[in-house]
Image (cartoon, rainbow, N blue to C red; front, side, top):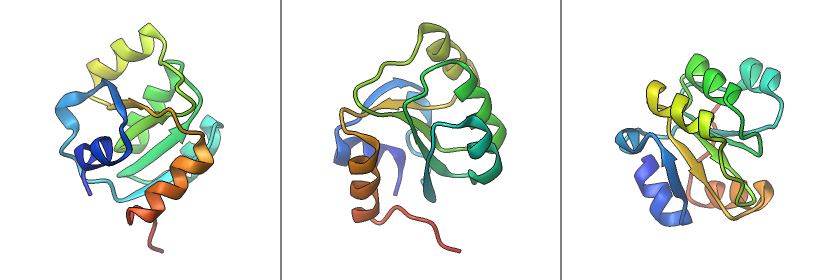
Length: 114
């Protein structure tokens, strides 16, 4: 499933990285600890978090994550949007809490294998 498919299905708002919405999402990871995402995130994962600062972009780039999704309607900081655009990292916003968003993603078939 592509990011564009998920944006439509989950009514996500695109704040950065619109040019990369055709990327395939191969899994998901939910965490608010950057060190945890560095240790456990996988390329192609959709990262669910409430962290909205610029360091999230560095982690997403380092791990080749498909996108960052901010939950609970949180908006990214301005420098986060600028860095995400420069790095071509999609930043999306969901009105849903992390638990509900993760459940809906699983229901759409987004999950990890192995």
